[in-house]
View 1 (cartoon, rainbow, N blue to C red):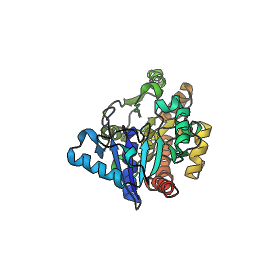
View 2: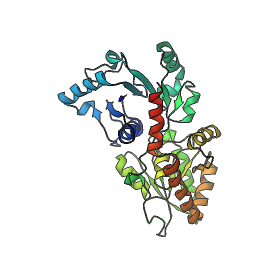
View 3: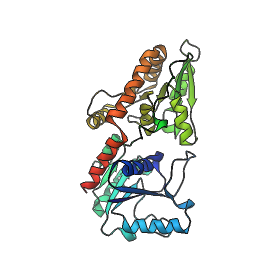
View 4: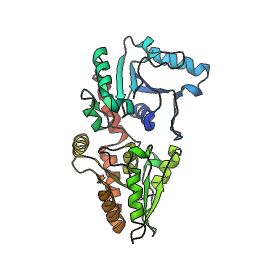
Length: 319
């Protein structure tokens, strides 16, 4: 099976991670074509149109002709040109997947997408986090993945061997959507007390630098929007105590996928929760270390890139 993923921009580097995992852990092959680079995070690329010469553009056309599956991410669809190539010209005989990641257009008007898929008879629908199933009930949740054995996604030895404040990181792609104001307010409130924090607010840097900086920390704050982000998965794999506001619905779906109710996230739904959790972690370093150890164990045993991509492979096989 040959899978061609297509995206205007790769959402948080997830599409390229899926391609890498498909090629590494399944008998299938996957490629990714993208059109734009947003932010300066320097995620790995494959067939990025602005970087392609004539040979690369020709290769993309060949891949469109030969693919068995067109896997569209976010708002991209068959009417989106990729240079001189239009996916709609190559749909005959192919399976089509639409994969949503919480793009603003989708969140604000999911009915438009539902109507389009119903009109076109599209039933191979995926969403990246459980909350999005409420917007697109016909879809299946396909968890995102991180390569748990990649050195940047493993725990950094010696983090707990040096004295000093608890090191807490936060890497919001969009501060207005990630409770950054709440986080900074809590940090300020703790400045004059005995449990001060050393904060790394990671903003608009290449992904490799972001991961390296996270890896040096003890705690990661994701957000309190009711679900989790890719940042959570990165921090859990690195053995950090990860704070996020997963609501009951999301916890239930995650537990079903992971096969356990013992989830590693440190829960905080509002600002006062966040302050309480940070005080607990800062005041008991052994507890913080134990939470991080459980985080890493959970990702290796329950959420490895192999386990996640095998779920995607079964989805392809059932189409």
